[in-house]
Image 1: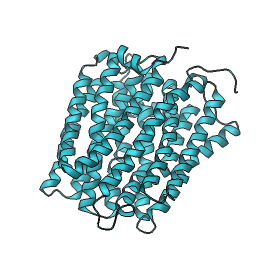
Image 2 (image 1 turned 180 degrees about the horizontal axis):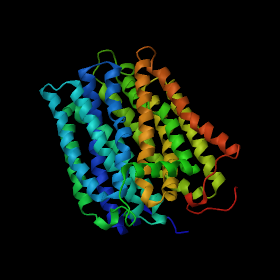
Image 3 (image 1 turned 90 degrees about the vertical axis):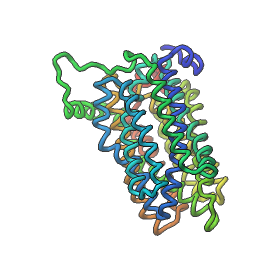
Image 4 (image 1 turned 30 degrees about the horizontal axis):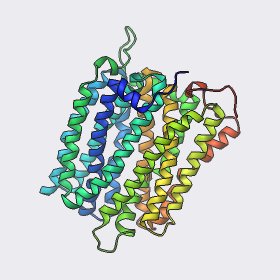
Length: 430
């Protein structure tokens, strides 16, 4: 097997990946600037948890409707062009949030957030499908870790800086910064050669049929046990994990803030910063863990136990006495989750054929985000009756449940990790 590449070597020697990664560094920072501002803006327009829920659902639910189309598009057409066009569209939509300063109602903000989700679905599908085509098998884990650790680093920095920007410069500055970040991202992607990101061509004489393409992707998922199991795990995790952003907002503004206080944005920024720091730490550790997971039994047990532990840690955060210990416990939970996710995502990427990557990844993401949307709607309703702390405990226990299911399936011999999902597969369990 090819030796895993290091971060420095990957960025130095692989120019297309370096351009994609550089664009992400900028755009992800702007996205988290905007996210803190959007939550603050909605809280200013309405203090109801259902208002915040509507914004969060608008960022997730549209994926269910648009993901099948996005998956087909990026598996059939020029992925580089898809990323550039969607970056420019997101730049325009980001400026639309400025209409709140001239009296735009809440539904306009929610609609704009939904449209941002639609365009981001196309971008993320094209990006995820392109990464595997840009790197060698030995670079794949490193590339995945670098992509996701950058996202989580930007969450950490963007949440912290977004909170400061909102407090001192106002929400409008965050929206302008976000718009400019997408323009910079498009300029970086423009430098990537077209041949590197072009999707596999349809077979000779085969007409591109939307429904047929969707069915092909779904059929692959249904008939491939490991891929099917990973997607089901992600869906089950989202039942509890989907509540997190809503719970963070309620705790920051109404539990950890003094009545009538103005520190809600700062509290929320600290929680998101801790969450991002944990995800970043976990992703950095995932590359080392990837070298230790070298047989199918060990890899399978790792996925199950980390899913269980991250949920239990999240549940424990609900009984923490103050903001700082709460944020610290969330950091630990997110670190464990990121280690599992980095390894899991790389395993699935190794298994998937290039011509199906876009459809499988978007289906996975669509089902996960749809479940998160439903989870948030339910949580938003329940939060009008019970406290946010109790909901954190419930959320964590639900998020831990797929770990239990996975371990039971392995114990009963109904689930195993395929050899091709591992970088250095050993023939037996140890």
